[in-house]
Length: 154
Image (cartoon, rainbow, N blue to C red):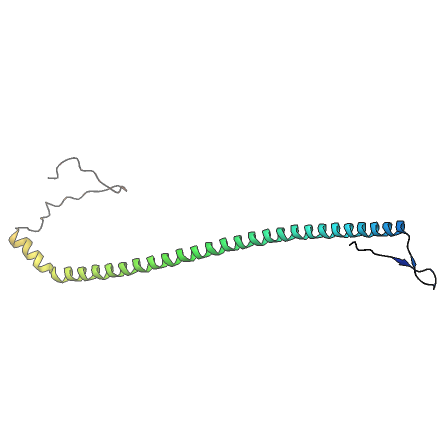
């Protein structure tokens, strides 16, 4: 069964009269056209909104990616700094250990090396004697850093 709509119009204060069939179709056609126009306008507005939403989503995604890359770089640099500080502290610790070992060795050598004992050993056991004045040869040097020896020293 078909749905039948009837449109009425009032003319003055009398009872309602029915619209003729042709006018009814024209009104129905105008209503449909208006509905289509509104629907198309709504669809265009929705399409624009979707494009804006996509664009905003792309901008937001790119911003998040840039921010994520920035934070990853920051964390990487922070890790490198911590590693470098750890290496520096271990090297400083090794340096202090080597300095203390060097100082202990130097003290041991100084305590064991008695200059008088060295002099006695050189003169008595090895037969060394002090140089006479005739055995000492003096060389004058220009402002050079070095001196070349070409012959045997007498």
